[in-house]
Amino acid sequence: MASRRRKPDFPVGQARRFLEPGPVVLVTSAWKGQRDIMTLGWQTVMEFSPSLVGCLISSVNNSFELIRGSGECVINLPTVELVDAVVKIGNSSGVDIDKFEAFGLTPGQADVVVAPLIEECHAAFECRLHDDALVERYNFFVFEIVKARAAARPVHPKTLHYMGEGAFMVAGDVIQRKALFTKVR
Image 1 (spheres, one colour):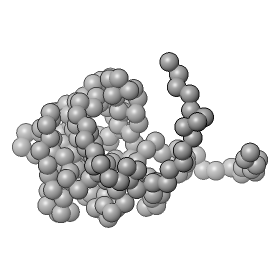
Image 2: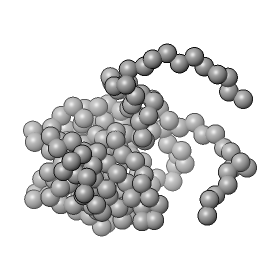
Image 3: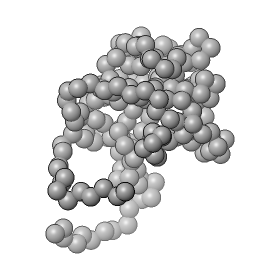
Image 4: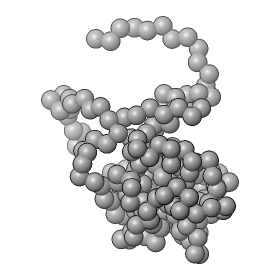
């Protein structure tokens, strides 16, 4: 059993250090002849069927307009090997550069959406806008994953999780508890 721990006050503005919702992803978009890649650390699975993902995308980001206009994107899952590209993409604007060319990434053809996928990423999730009710107020998009593909190996890739202030945690260790798991029906 875990021991009790003293918990001193902690700055609320740094809560993301413990509560970040998932791995950092690279979101690709395309609209009216433009394409872009953005680094995103604020997404969450919302439903299993249909497969819904919520993403917080700042309205000052170039990708916001491309996604708003096209109603689609690709959520690409980078692994630890791409950490430098992830940071550089997040610190640059697609208005100024083609991020695929600038950071040596290969655009791939998606099957269902127009936005390209990133060949170097472990997985790609093609998405269409499912609900935009919270976009105007919170910049929160709800997407439906309409096509998914992932590399067969490794089964549990080393993904990046942003903790703020330029720090990342790497996930990849797996702890199995199948014997304790019961599925709610």
